[in-house]
Length: 78
View 1: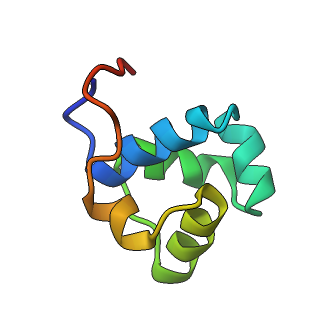
View 2: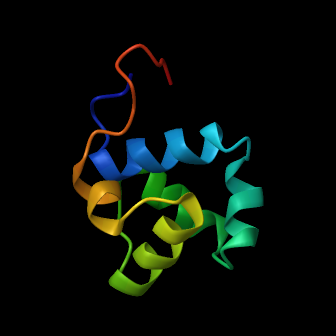
């Protein structure tokens, strides 16, 4: 597991994949530019409040848990 990324980036990557989607497909679904979503996943930028809520809603989690919780199971390798 990539511990260098922020929890939000790790959680985004894991939850998008767990839903059987790729980044491009998910970006289209939430009306977000792919390159911006990729930066969120990489942890180089954090989503603003409204985007975070939209992303979290689409993934079925709360914005707070997306940002701060470790949602990726330990045994999952990314």
